[in-house]
Each structure stands twice: as structure tokens, then as C-alpha cells.
Image (cartoon, rainbow, N blue to C red):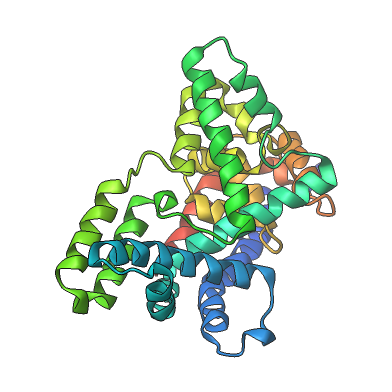
Amino acid sequence: MSEPAQAGPSMEAVEDILREELAHGDVIIATARPILRHLLANDDHALFSDEVIARVRGMMVHVARQMLFVLADEAGVADRAAFADAREEAIAVSLLEDSDLLGHAHALCIEAQIALRLQHRSGIDAVLSPLLQELAASSDQAMAAAAMRVLSAQARYRQQQHRMEFPLSELPQALFDRALAIFASHTADMGQPADLARASLQGAYDPDANRIGRILRLVSAMQHRATRALEVDHAGVSIFVVALSLACGQNRDTVILSLGENQCARLALSLRAAGLGQKAVEEQFLYLHPEIELPDGFDRIRVDRASAMLAAAQVEEAM
């Protein structure tokens, strides 16, 4: 008696396919920041007019300019704009040389681009998603207030991206500290006014008030209902990436990059690691990558195996 034929590829074969695609995507992520840094540092910006490059550079100039304005106030400088004009370029270049600052600004730009693409292609509002509408109308006053704070933050974020701005208040704590350290290294010649400016900047900074922190608290407050945030068409891109980051244990910026081209294996594994079944994963791909089909046998990948493959890739990235 012959053995029954296999219904499809083995789980090992599917894992090999996904692992190979994941490795290819990891190489792209690993080389993205050095390449972007090179393009941003190049003097002939006309050669590199890509929107993302222009936005990232504009955001870092804005970070430098905000700190210089505070320094100008502490030093009693009458023309703050001229003072900032003279110093902002050197500080912005140093900010761009910081890999994590650069990577975070890059991810924010990609997030905005994807949100606008989905709005144009699928009618998913880049600011007021269906989930945010529901939560803002909740009878739970705390939940409704949290949703309204996220809504306001999302509206500001869209305007900031349009103007190529990056408010210091939106930097995560670790990156705010790095920006301040870079600022200090460029303003040591200013003496006491520079010390006072740093103290003023630190006093005005609230790590709990930034947009990503507000979204994180909103998703956490949803508790068992947070699975609804794993539907990009319902939650919108910004809430979706926070929920996915929490559910699959990956950095939010990495999750944002996984939504882009050449990162489909990482996205599929992230969704599976978050507990989504094949049908739910396919539904998300319909919005994010409608031209891509999951490999035959993807349903054989267990949640724990998807998590392990992502963790192994993260270890390799860090080496």
C-alpha cells in the first residue's frame, strides 16, 4: 500500500521559504540607514530629490532649530532666526549621523506615506479611523478621552509631516537624550546660556505626552478588544503598527518598515506571531500588499515558530 500523498509542502519547506525571504528583507533593513545617511550627507541634494530623504533631513533641521531657539532666548539674542541659521546645519548633520535618530525619523516618514496610500487606495482615513471613531464615542469616559487625545495627536502628526517638522516633544526619551547630548557638544562654547537652555529643554519635555505613547496607552486600555487594532482597515496604520508591535514583540519602527516592499515575509510572520490565522493574515495583505499571495502551506506555521523566526532574525540584525 502506497503512502498517502502530501496535501502540500511540509512546514519545514514553508519555513525555509519564509526564512530566506526574511533574511533578504533583513539585509535591506540593515543597509537602509547607512545608505540614507550617505544620501543625506551628500552635498549635491539635487541628485537625491526623493521625498523621504527631503523629509528626514527637514525633520532633523527642525529638531536642531528648536533647540537653538531656546539657546538664543537664554543668551538674550535678539534675532533668533539668524542665530539658528548660522548653527543649525552642523547640528542637523550630527543628528543625521545617529543611526537610531535617523531610523526613527525614517520610520515616521514611511508611516505617513503608507497611511496616505491606503487613504487614496482604500478610503482608510489617515487620521480618523473607524476604531478611533468608535472609541471616541465610547460610554467609558476615560476611553473616549484617550481616543480624543490620540485623534488630536494624529492630526498634528499629519500636519507636521506635511511641513517636515519633528517637535522635540515627539521624540522618545532615549532619542531626546541623544539629541540633547549632540546639542551640548555643539554649543559648549556658549557656556552658561547653553547649560540653561538644556535645563529648559529637559524641563519642558514630557515623555508621556508624545503621540506614540498616547496610542500605546489607548491600545493597552482596550485589553481583550485590542485584537481589533490588528485590522489595518479598521484601526488605521498608526494604531495598527503599535498593536502589532505589542502583539509580536518587535520594535515599532521595525514593524513600520515591514509594511513596505520586500518585507512581506516579515509582515506575514509578524501577523502570525501576533496570533492571526491565515485568513486574517490574508485580509491584511489585501490592504497592504494586494498583489502578494502567502506561500502555499503558510497555515502550517505555528505562532511559536513565527515568533522564534522573528527573534532569530532580530539577533542576527544586532550582531
